[in-house]
Length: 172
Image (cartoon, rainbow, N blue to C red; front, side, top):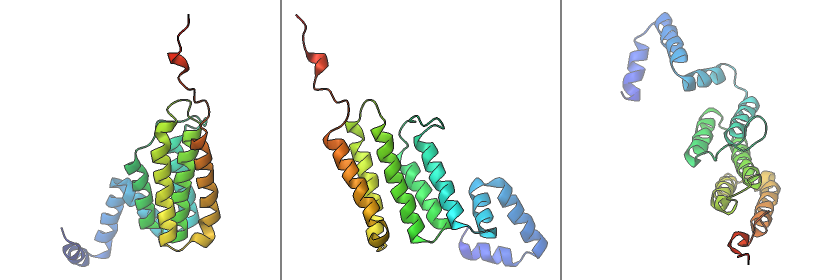
């Protein structure tokens, strides 16, 4: 169905029919419920905090212990959906930087396979940096990004607990 045919069908309905269709949509789809809730009472700050909490849950259990690494497309989906709700580039940039920070914290808490996480951590950082530069928000987020990349560089330059082949040494 095209948008034009949807508009035509909606124009042919009376007010009660429209209310019924929207109520059914509200009950049928989680995304529609979230969108309509936001449309009724828009609160971009609360939406940002909710999405940050969702990102945190994707990386960590409630105890603070690491979960398995979330897929990149799941993280992109959260950002894409958030950007459809909230049209504020500052809040979108804040969410993207939050993802990069969580990715870094998640990697720094790992006990093994640390070096394999570097690509994902740097990709999350680069996505946030590119968005911030494209939206011309360096004055707001430049220092935060600078501190994050310095931490990332230092962490991967000297990863904790990396042993240099201790298991290969022979004992005589």
